[in-house]
Amino acid sequence: MLDQITPLILTYNEAPNIRRTLDRLAWARRIVVIDSGSTDETKDIVCEYKQADVIRHDFHDFASQCNFGLTQVTSPWVLSLDADYELSDALVWELQSLSASGDVAGYRAQFVYRIHGRPLRASLYPPRIVLYRRKLAQYLQEGHAHRVTVAGTVVSLHGKIFHDDRKPLARWFASQQRYANDEADHLLARRDGKLGRADRLRLMAWPAPFAVLFYVLLAKRCIFDGWPGWYYALQRVLAEAMLALEIADRRLRSPT
Image (cartoon, rainbow, N blue to C red; front, side, top):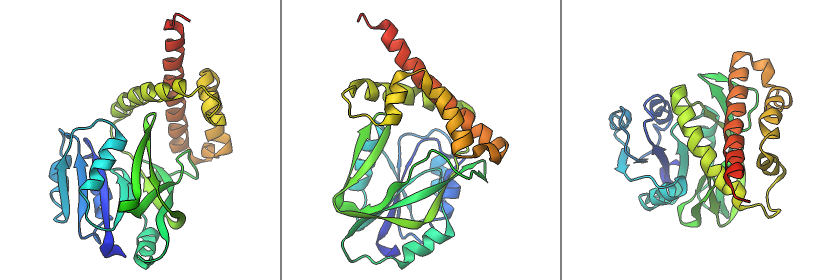
């Protein structure tokens, strides 16, 4: 199975992360990296890995970038990874044991969230489809997020992926400002009863930052993770506060 899988990674100034991701992909015959114009050492680091191909492509949104990446892959299976993901040993062994035949079209994985290498006992990061048959997959953009749709059966993997973004905090703030704008577009365009409970709460704006603080610290028990837990909780509060401000600002500026 490993011989039929091509890892696909999107990058933009991922020098603090990309080496840890690529070190876990020594088994791959080819790695496709779609870079949207990095100005740091990302491309130099990727070029140290002989099986990695760096392809420059201008960024429009995540879904478009991923769909372009699929056109650059020739293997039957794609392993879609962010540049701050690290495969666990258990997941690599599991990939090796999978059968390429059968009716399964994709596999989803769960994540262990890390803060500068320190794992949290839980997070808000959901499981996602990471391994799928290339010809049965397509990406869609939803707010600031993107998701892959796979035409067929999707089953869960047991091995985990570590999520550990070590880019500077200033980069996180800049990203969250863009995400808040995109997410506000998405939420305000879907005020039609189709939003889930969490998104309806976010659309109300003011409750979400307070709710997420208690949910992360108490329901997810991150309060027992010490400073990494508080760091993660404060990040989520700030992200929700920026979204709430974006929504409130638009409502105040609206003539209606």
